Image (cartoon, rainbow, N blue to C red):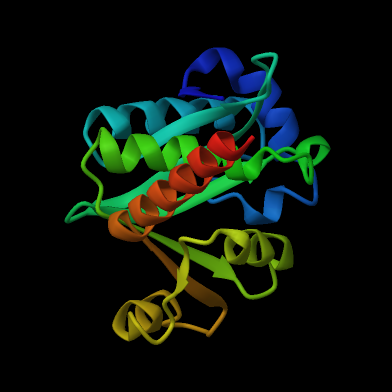
Length: 184
């Protein structure tokens, strides 16, 4: 479902990223293919320096369908950025990609908190975030960070996922699944 970013997927990802329903919500926009390759190289190098973590999201056949990233890493926390190509919207890829990424971040890479800043106009992403049971809206909880990301205009909602919230949810989910299996 996820793999480290590489240059082999650039054509497919660039074509998906440029769709008008995707492009406005991509953090590092590229106006042409060569620029996308350059940004991908920079992303790979930034990950090697520990500044971010970036993965390519794959469908069940191994085809690249989007990216998931943790940016601005400081004090074992960072900001999530995810996009899926338009043909894959509503197909059930978002939650499994996030779960796989969060497992890697929390249990392999030592991340403690993940923040999401989502444009208040990005209804699709707001709904996706609010579906996740381990996500907390943090506009009030992290008021100084909320004010910082909205320093020019109040355009973002802030969400937080802590390792504890995520772990609790995953353990509770596994316990319910085991109980269901035992009853069957």
